[in-house]
Image 1 (cartoon, helix red, strand yellow):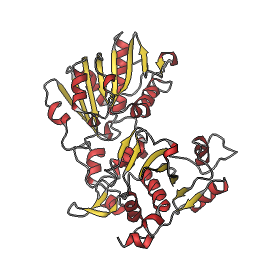
Image 2 (tube, one colour):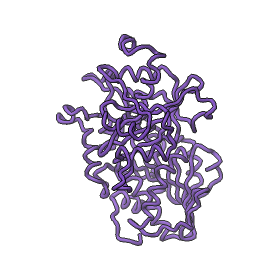
Image 3 (cartoon, helix red, strand yellow):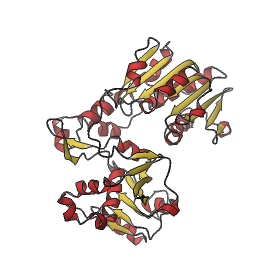
Image 4 (cartoon, one colour):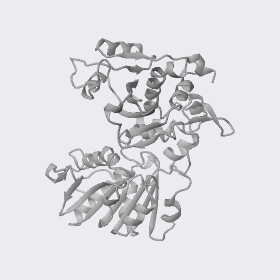
Length: 411
C-alpha cells in the first residue's frame, strides 16, 4: 500500500495465507469487501502483470456495489492512485502495474469460459452456481477468494469448498471492521434478541445470527420470496398502467421511490430512489442539499403521474404537492399493512435486477414469528423501505379492482 491506511484482521489473514482458496464467511459490514479489495490492489502493486477477475452473479450488481468501492479505495481519500486513463468503462477493466483488474457478471457464460487469471474473487458467492466456481478455479493460478453472508444453512460452499485442504476459512463480523460508523453498529446491534430490542420490536434472531454474528441460518417466512428478478421493465408501449410508491426517510431510514408497472397482467417493480438525508424540496439557500424534488426531476417523473405516499408524513406530502407533483396520501388503518401485502400477492410479480436495495430487502423482509417459531400475519418492521413504498402504490392503485378495504379485511 502507498499510504499508511487502516487494514483489518481479514486483510492480514488473506495476506498471510499460503492456501489457494480463501472462503470469507462473515456478517454484514464485516469488512469483507474492503479487505479483499485492499489485498487485490496490494498484490497488483507488488507484482507486475497480474490478471485479476472479480465477479458477481450479475454485472449490474457489480457496477452498483464493488466498482464504487474499488474507486473509493483507489481515490484520494485512501490510496490516492486512481487514474481515470486506466479505467475502461465499457469493458469494466482497470490497468495497473502492467496488469489488469476485470469486473464481470457470472450470469453470462462467455464472460468466464476460457478466461485465465492469477486471482479470482467471487463476491456474494452464495448467489453463484457451483459450475461457475468449477470453471473459474480451473483457470485461476494463484488465489481464489469467495466472500458471503451465511444466509443459507445448506450450500455448495459448505460441502464442496471449505472442506478442501487447500481452503483457508476466515470468519468475520462487524466488530472486525475498523472503518464502521457508530450509527451502523447501532443498527446491526438492534437485531440482537435482547429484552430491550424485543420490546422495541427490532429484534430478529435469524437476522442477528447472519448479519450480526456471521453465523449460518436460513431466513424463514419471507414475504416476497416469489418475486422474480428480471433484466428490465417491459417496453413502455406494453404498459397498461404505471404509478409510483413513496416511503419517506431521512437520518436512519432511506427515502424510497418505486416505479410500479402493470403489464401482461403482472406487476413489475423498479427502484428509482433509495437514499438517506433527502429533504423534501429544494432550498435555494443551500443548493448542495439534495432533495426528493431534485431526484424526481433527475428521474423524469411526470408531475401528472400518481405518487402514493405515506400518510404519516402530511407535511412532506404537502411540500411535494406544492412543488407541483401528484402526491396522494395512502389510506392507512388497522390491518392495512396485511391488506396491502395481500393485494400485491394477487399478482405474479417481478423486480428489475438493478433494484439493488429492493432485492436485498426481498431476501430479508419476512413475517414475525411467534414463541414457537411459526410465522404470524404481522411483518417485521425492518428491510421494508422499498416494499412499503411498493405496497402503498399497489394498494391504492388497485383498491377498486380487488375490492374495498373492508372486503380485503374480511378475506
